[in-house]
Picture 1 (tube, helix red, strand yellow):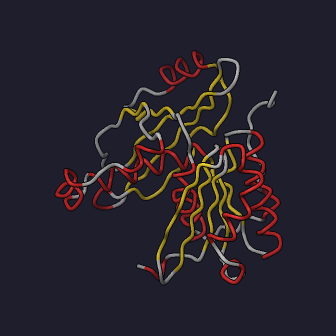
Picture 2 (cartoon, rainbow, N blue to C red):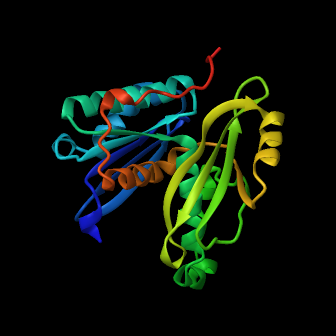
Length: 249
């Protein structure tokens, strides 16, 4: 129902791939990505204001930004931009974990691929997201009846990883309903992370490993924020900080 869709903007700059997404109650949602690399700092604003005009910005309900983990400079750039806009517009700002957005994106994709309509045309469609290097080490479990745990990690520095565990709640008909942080994103030795998962969780678990750019998951950044927005959450722009997890040097 379009009436449930907020008027909002999403930004994802934690990797060299810029991702922008917007939603509107009447027109639905759309997103775009660009491979900016080192030009992110000089071209972000040009792409942003081409993607969404000043007039539309002034009518937003909220802004959502991927606050990390990710590259130090690019992550900070996205968060600072989002904070500045939210402050000037006096609207809520949601900070969404890059790991959470990745998990939600792939759960939604799997759910769509398992729908009858998608199965019927699966052989006729090409996987455009493969060009975004989405092919990652994913051990997908069957769709659960109620809830499942998902563990995700991405490489950090010095043999460490950023790791997190999320609880995925499912609604009627196997539709993903909510993503709850079971273990917040943190930095941990890669070997210790695997030991932790084996020792702390006995139930079946979906495991994911991130590789490649993440801008294409910007629609999930916006969707996760919209879920919280519908629950009447209104975070102040000052509450959103970049998450680096460690020193950039």
